[in-house]
Image (cartoon, rainbow, N blue to C red; front, top):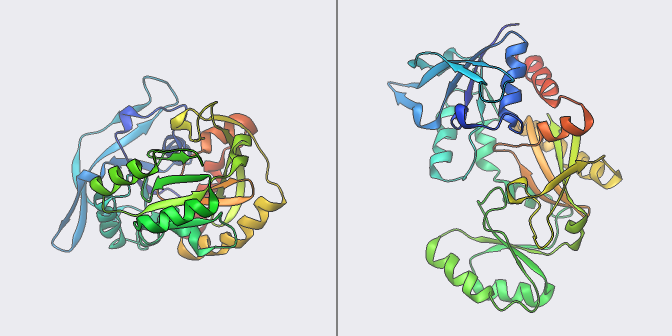
Length: 313
């Protein structure tokens, strides 16, 4: 089949094609004979009962510095697309949420990946709370006294914004750290959002495993090692990727959450596992495809397109 595929993403000309998952998703679509189009979230419109966007045709190439050619911009009815990829990076704010409301008007007649309703309803740091037996001790609140009580119980804690991404705003508060009150004051003054407080998992020194699931099935993994003196293992924070496989606990976690991902139409998910605990379920703009291919030689974008084409056919 030949499909019309639109990528809703950040500026395509600025991506790092050696690491970007959306790039290989688009390249795989192109290699399968699908027609690519591109637009940014700000290009969306709702007019007269239709969801429109100012799009450009897109040709991709695996050439650093010369990876894309864009056609002339034109406004089209997005219902004429067969597939739309919701792939802009967070922050998961009202602007992001608004794009899910637009795309919800199109799905499933125009197939949106991931299901925009499910993306909106399942933020990464809240979705895993539906599986309390799998997650580390966790508190989500703005109640300062509750946070202090949690710290008193668990001593060593991680504090992070509920809707942060890429390791932004993550703090490791050790038992002798005197900065918790100041951190809370700064957050409360600048944000109305709750904080996520978790017991610190010392196993993070051995790595934070990213596992990719396609339509609820685990298909690959990579481990991310935090640099010395750093609590975060995210690539954006200097984490070092290394090859990884799935152990019995990983498979147990995947078996528990996989059916729910599939039911909600969350075809592309990336979960984070530290020391056998599920810490996040990433469904907005999961990454990791290229890192896994670099170590395992497996092109997981092929499995993604196999799943999408099967559902459309």
